[in-house]
Amino acid sequence: MSTPIAPRLDSVLDAWSGEAEGVVEIDRSLAEGVDFAGATRIAVDASRIEGATLTGLRLDKLEMTDVVCTKLESAALQAYKANLLRVRAMDSRFTGAEFAEGHFEDCVFRGVKFDEVGFRFSTFKRVRFENCMLRQADFSNAKLTQVTFTGCDLEAASFVSATCRDVDVTTEDLTAVKGILGFKGATISEVQLLQLAPLLAAELGFRVEGVERR
Image (cartoon, rainbow, N blue to C red):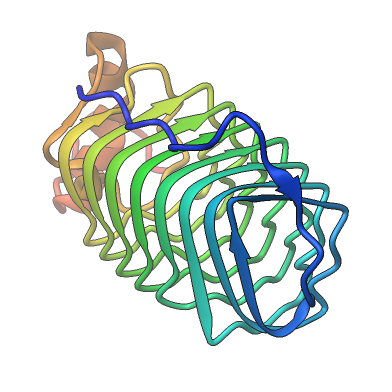
């Protein structure tokens, strides 16, 4: 499993002092405590964003390249076809956000709340989810390549028609995941295989004799 490439940042960044409305461009800067309430497009390059607010935004465009984010408040953010490259996001909240048809490459999400987030038809390449809340997250029809889930809550997350290649979920509880066949191609443990047998049988349409139906 390849390690995501780290963001390329200068050791010293100047404080960002641009406008947080309309088309927002942040380049080689440190943006702290910014409220992007009036933004329609956001492009961030080689920067840090700390304590920003993007709650409820409807963005026409979201692009981040070589970015480190901490403590973002981004519940209900709508950013269809977002493009995130070499991004680190930590201790942030994206509950109910929409990233359908997005592209995530060389990203690490650590301690991020992604409950009820829409990742439908999105592409993930060399991505790590560490200690993230992913309850009812929707990965339907997503393509995941070299992706690792570690210590995450995947209760009721949907992987219907997902495509997995070099995906590691060996530490996760998958018993409440929807669309378990979407993990075809992923690596699971022997214990998980035994736990998932009833779900796999149900999705394949098998009737198992001697097992009571719930």
